[in-house]
Length: 315
Image (tube, rainbow, N blue to C red; front, side):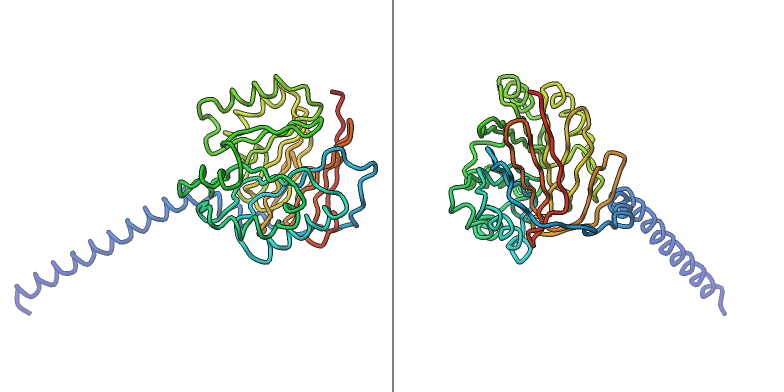
């Protein structure tokens, strides 16, 4: 072998070594980035394995009949058999006990909030209930704003803005946009609305859950901004979506936090120290209020109940 050939082979070997080292370094960096971005999701996927309920029981008419009756459902965003089953379950209950409002808890349209897809995700699956005169009220989820369609979507749904309030009898319902919870005027609106109301019952809808043991987990930022206001003004119930499951917390500062994000699909869930009940099951939440008594039920697609709690208030 000539000296020149040997030198070429050494240079080639060094080049290959550098290339391999570069590929390894790139892979290590990429893995680190992926680890940072997806670590929570990977851990959640591996640990949140709780599925459907162990026990269900028949839905029975409320006695006495509700003075205010609300159907709550989150993450309806995909058209298809799952959301159709959710709509049918709501209609089945409404046939005997009509609802005052259908409350959409965000992620109303996947993947990016396109208003033209509301028909398949909302108007068709819930047509029977809406035709009976039930109001539809909605808040925005993270998917609703990805494509910049949030305001247009709310307009199609008949909403006046990203945060709003409704009064049904002795019930105040406030809807918020947790995508921009610190937007100018939003928290002031919440404070002023709660302070000005003499409603016995105060309910707040916000997409990102302040307390969740599900795949996405608690929104600590939302909790930090909202919890002091909720406690100060005597809010009794907060309803969220985002996690595709059902969860109910123990009362925290007088507030019960419920996640209902299984309108069009489910994902395994978990438990935490604040968990009173959690299941991964297609459902909607039935809220019936009479006087100082609020009955909350998680109603499955087949019309059975798999969680129920009664809240009372001295207001």
